Length: 130
Image (cartoon, rainbow, N blue to C red; front, side, top):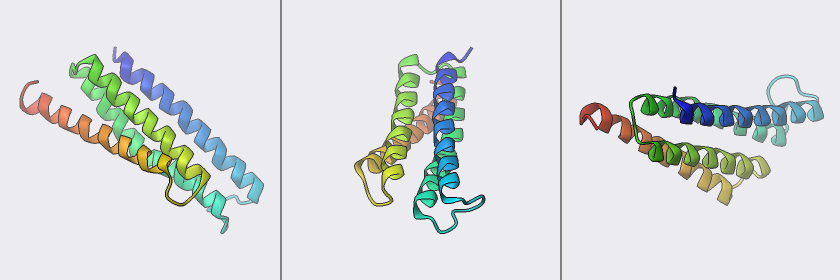
């Protein structure tokens, strides 16, 4: 059983639910049912949620496939932790301010590093028989 990727999928699911609750709270506060109604705070929360959805599914799929392919557990833990920390930092940074922030910058950097690392590990396992 792919326990490491299952753990990170569960943790990311909880984070997704928190981000979803934030959007719902801002919708209720702004009395907006669809779209952002011109409310900049709501628009920002929608982007935090949307950015999560844009990156996390593929990353978790890669993590699970790497685990099933037998990648070393230390690498799986590192990739999963980078992804989770990156998503937390990004959500915190962008959720507080639409401008540049250390959380947003480091969150995206960690997310991209995790994705590139997992993609290269996958290629290595498939092409070189890692």
